[in-house]
Image (cartoon, rainbow, N blue to C red):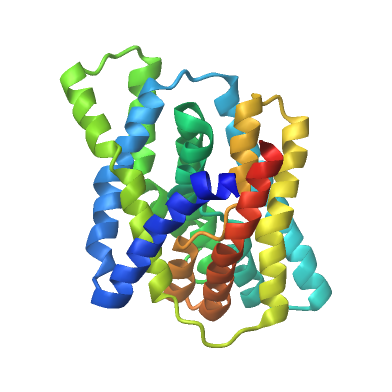
Length: 298
């Protein structure tokens, strides 16, 4: 109960604030989301990667992210083959289970649970997940319509991608950023997490559930909240990872479905009702599963 009150509850209260204001005022989410995507997140990403001590752990995080993604995709393909689901359902399930909410849910949980050092890992992981989601998420949502070129274009249009590259250039090239510039970058970047938490609450308020296909939803919940962290745990046993990074990655892998995948599903008409249902239900159930996982991880 202490972990729930000290770590999970504060995050839920911010989500609730966003959910409540959206239900009450019916605000346009897009301008706020645009500010977060084009200003706040790139500055947070730049500061994190510029000040990070880049080492083997970051390389292992990239490898971990790729292996986790492909592991979850394979699990979905096997399930759909057994249940004889078509390509559209397969894509919808992949959208709902292979991409976790590492940003506006995972990062604040890690911050409350493991402090600034764990948070730095969480921000790095959320950037990797954002790039993966913008490529593979778009690909699976638009499979047969847009293809790889469109997905690659989406990644290159993402400001966080360029923020990472710029930060790496300055970091690895030992190019100092003036303190007065860096302080402003940090000041604005620090606003990212609370803003995206409010946005998630607002996005959840916009999800409309129409048809509930409980067999597919149940698989989505099991894959996202249980199989994903188990797979992450297995990868952590294999890869040479720092103990704190292991906890951050396992916890991040146990996060509910990313709300962004709902936008992709709606835009490309890839089982939007199914993806929305999995996103909402995994978010609700994760209140319990994340609390239990935090107790297990310590």
